[in-house]
Image (cartoon, rainbow, N blue to C red):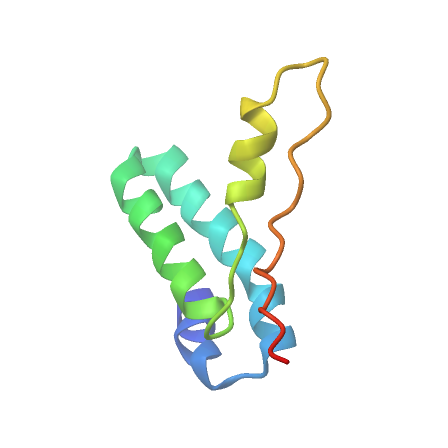
Length: 89
């Protein structure tokens, strides 16, 4: 039943789709644990992210990698700033 709801999620509002994401991830985690189909689970998790995330969603994963790369005693790297536009007189 959950797979049918996940397939129909493309036609549902975004709030419902965000709520279905953890359910789908846990469902496929259960398949991976019980049946040992880990590559299937990873492929389905990627498919769920593509299906349930809004079109054009930018998760900004570079923040996570940048924080991990920083040394423990240093402050985190600054967030990306937009380029300034030249002023024309």
